[in-house]
Length: 295
Picture 1 (cartoon, rainbow, N blue to C red):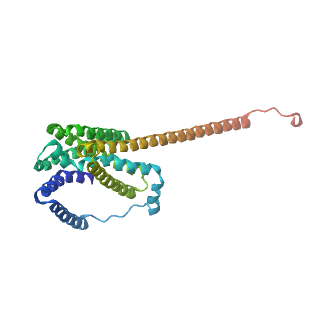
Picture 2 (cartoon, rainbow, N blue to C red; picture 1 turned 45 degrees about the vertical axis):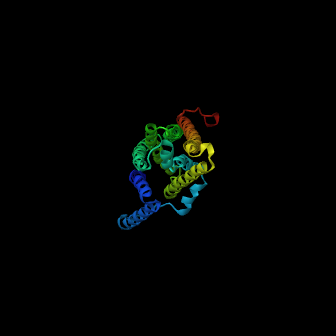
Picture 3 (tube, rainbow, N blue to C red; picture 1 turned 90 degrees about the horizontal axis):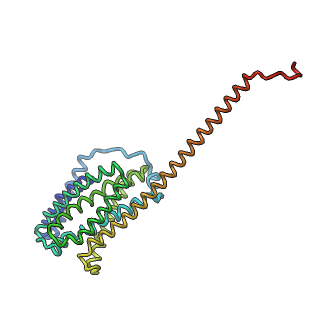
């Protein structure tokens, strides 16, 4: 699904930007409506029917009682929310600050799309190797790239390089965030994936809102401050990731301690049983002297 999302960014974002600049913003939404209807028809005709999993509704909803699930959701909201704090206003940043012509923005967004495709692939490989540590590293990289963008957006060459790496870092987080959520709520995979997608969308909306507030209120100069404010949003996601990492480490220590104690007592019980067997065998076979009564 996220691979399709990355391809949609490569093709859809530049085309939508071009249509909006050439024929007005309504033309983009008419195109999206038409594509959505075609997608709906294709899903109805081509997607096979499958049976739902064995988990019950109570089991699915029950995972919401776990604090780790809430931490994972906030990781997604803030970790990815920083991306759209800046990306929502990427066109005015590139035009008004960097000095690109408005017609060139769609081509620059193709570069961003290539970056998110590579980031999605790289993030998946890193998540398979070491999930939370790699996710933490990518989020730190994302926060750094966003902060650097507030400096490089004044130079065209540096801005292009930063936009590319912003795409790599932005979607490098996606596989790790999704996999971590599924691992945290293994008993409720349907609800977990649904909630995490909702968390992504909430982060997108929240990020766009925060960026708009910065521009409207003129905080830090308005539009030029959007990238570093986006970096701060990502830092909040980093803090939740550290919380999740520490919580997982604590649970691993507790699990290890419980397993060790269990093994220790099993072995101790085994030693006791072996001692009883040896003692019983000795009592049954030892030539005890007869007492005077039986002499």
